[in-house]
Amino acid sequence: MPYLLTLFLALCLAQSAHAEGFITRLLNKPVPGGVAVVDLGNGPAAPQVRYQGKPALVIHEDGQRWITILGVPLTAKPGAQQVEVDGSQRSFQVEPREYRAQHITLKNKRQVNPNPDDLKRIERELAEQTEAYRQFSPNQPSNLLFDKPVDGPLSSPFGLRRFFNGEERNPHSGLDFAAKAGTPIKAPAAGKVILTGDYFFNGKTVFVDHGQGLISMFCHLSQIDVKVGDPLGRGEILGKVGATGRATGPHLHWNVSLNDARVDPAIFIGAFKP
Image (tube, rainbow, N blue to C red):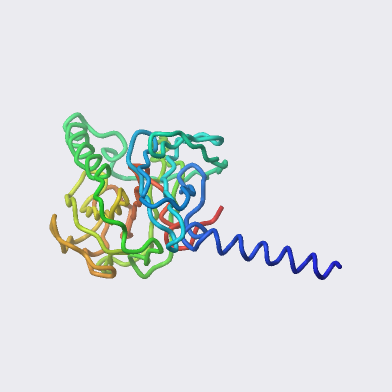
């Protein structure tokens, strides 16, 4: 009898895991700064989904059911969150997560407390980048299990509470890779270049639209090898690692944004740590 019960439970778990689908198992990390996957059922057409007033990514998982993949902002509070599906409200749960602090010393004091001219430039550049993050193209991403954009170990993780010269600033909105200057940077998934620039904080920067509000941003580059409008295949080179902008040394800073929420890129490369 105990054997039959064990076998039954194992079969139930196996069926549940199979029903859940690979993308859900990979991406569903519903924490502040994480990703929430919500089951939308198996209707004949893709539901229209909005989260916090913005359109959301919807895919047909394993040809069985529709799911929406939501970027949860770092500012989200644990507990119930509401998502709009075809005009009706549906809820999902956000779990708590704590992020540690990081203290950085910068020799260039203007990168901690910019002067008035710097602030005007920063405001202009922020507006450009915000517009890029809010783009929503209809095509689905080519893949949701991303490749690493560079061959190198992870350094500073996502979500760190950052202190520059003792002063608290915005949390770390991306994932850093330790890599030598000049290391080629590869597109982790196919997409289209929607913005490039040389910015006060980010230095030389490239934005890539992967589809349906899934955007990658790569910054501190030494060299940009693409231009706005260029299509990129998975693994194609878009630039080289550098230390431009507010950086203490060569590395790649990679942001992933989903429905205009910056989320932990480690989720998309299978490296998420609770």
